[in-house]
Each structure stands twice: as structure tokens, then as C-alpha cells.
Amino acid sequence: MIHSLTLLCILLFASPLVRFVPMAVLAGILMVVSYNMGEWREIPQLLKVTKTDISVWLVTFALTVFADLTVAVEAGMILAALLFISRVAATTTVSQVTDGYIEDGRVHILQDKDIPYYATIFRIHGPFLFGATDKISVVTEELHQLPPVVILRLRNMTALDATGLFALEEVAKQLHSTKRTLILCGAREQPSRLIHQAEFENVIGPENICENVLEALRRAEEVYEKLETNLERR
Image (cartoon, rainbow, N blue to C red; front, side):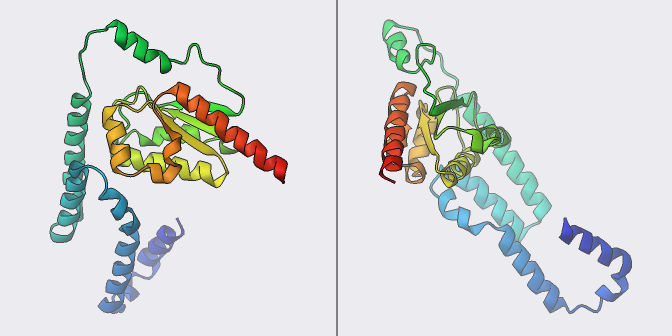
């Protein structure tokens, strides 16, 4: 906001003087601005995700450098939208309900589970792709009122992309900064594959990625018991 107001004041009141600023100075300023906007620290993480996500980034980056920023943004949005359609379509399945299917699903349901006071459960329902990642903010809106363990149930999350993965990582970091533990559970095939490929277990710990909600509740109990033991020792 301060930078915007400063630039507005220069344009309104000092525009005749701007022409005396050396081009080399303006070039240096643009270099610094572009470097800060690049978010280069995210590139190593991005290279761990799927080839399609990397391709969208490379095309957008190349068009920004060799063509025009507006063209790059438009192309990037179109490619991301096509990728979104492809991923949503790929998650649609038709299968027969069998006795084995019903039995396998019992460990995922919440109706017969008791959620302890030291844990809370959030769920993601539907594809967690670009354009929907801002909804994850509901987890951290009242961060300091959350219990020590936060379980994120991914059973109904049908698809995940790099943007969604980065949003999950940001939530994990915010919870970790307040000494809270994030546990993921019930991820389906495509999200589970991407989480593993991006080495997300290094962010929250492999023991905090569980196959179902029952396992997650057991892990939450272990975390809380360890926390209580550490407090007693102090």
C-alpha cells in the first residue's frame, strides 16, 4: 500500500522529474522487483510435483521472459484450467459396492468414532486445486483456539495439485509455529501419490500421514501422551 501511494504521488506531482532518472537505475529497480516476485525458493519444491504442473510453470515462465507478461498469465490460466478439467475427470469412477468395499470403509467413517478433547478434525470435500485453496484458511482462522492436534481428513478430497499442496504445507507450518501437530488421513490414490512424490512427509513427519481416521485418532493419542509427558518433566 505504501509503495502504491508513493508511486501515485510521483506520477501526480513529480512526473516531469522522472525523465531525469537514469535508465540504469530503473533497470536495477526492475531487476530487484522481478527477483523478489519470482519466489525462487518455491522452485525446488515445484520440481518434485507432477510433470504436468512443471510444464505449466515452464510455459508461463518462458512466455514471461520471451513474450509478454499478459500473454504468459493468460496462457498459464488456460493451461491450469485444462489441467483442472483433466484431473477432475480422472477422479470420476464407477464401481460396484461389495461386502469387501463396505468393510474396508468402516475405518474411514466418523459416525462411530469418539473425537477426544485434545484433537479436532477438519475435512476437505471435493478437488483441492488452484482457485479453491483459499478455503483451507478456515483451519487457521482461530489458530490459538485449536487443540494440540489437528487432523485433516482427506477421504473425500478427490484431486490435489501443486497449489493445493503448497496450501497444505503453509497450514502445516502455521500449526507447527504454535506447537501444534497436523495429521493427514485417508488420502485417495492421486492425492496420496502427489503427497508422497513431493516428499510432504518431510514437512509433517511420515508418522503423521495415516491411512484412515481410526489410525489418525490413535496417532493423536500418542502425540498428546508425549506432550503430557514432556510437560510433567518440566
